[in-house]
Image (cartoon, rainbow, N blue to C red; front, side, top):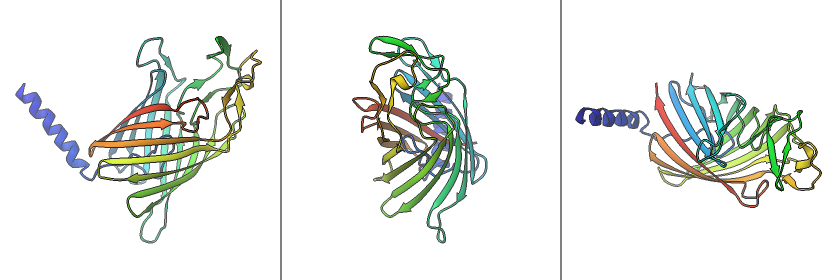
Length: 272
């Protein structure tokens, strides 16, 4: 027993020492930042979302500028009911084009994200509206929130621990009334070494979507998504330099739902 405890303490101290400065996540709530992982650094994220959903993401730093990762998610993982997995795993890539420094005013990163966020809709899904069940039209397949696709994001550090980001996303999904190009902005402030607050506005300028736009044989006028983007607020607490716990209040502007939905995320950073 003493041997196992000693090994556990040693592993914890190694992880703590390897990340003594405390790592900040490369993402805010839903949107990316220009940050990439260091070479030989790894990040594992557990993202819990509504309807018992869980999204598992793993990323590694291949070089000082290039990160790669894989992710997969499913609904119903927590709680009762049937588990419904996303259609496929997602690949992510992120390359740091410009690193902010003495002679450069900002960072710039180009990336690809193959896994969206939120509920997934496709021709295999039945959607409940007003006690009725309706099928998604076969030409549509999309994630409720973030789309899979390419992005270009810029970020800048300003005094007092504030980090400002803004970027553009090109969606590869077939979604109703959704612009293929959308914009996002965000800000992050590190109040202490263990407390970080994040605020972002995502999917700017998207059009209104009604259920009748993508459900077969549905003739109602109810909104599926209001026009405009989602305002998201996140709070991260660093329990150690290698582990952070995050609570986010998504869609404060009630674009999808009459009340914000909550997301809980666990991040682990390590070396390999």
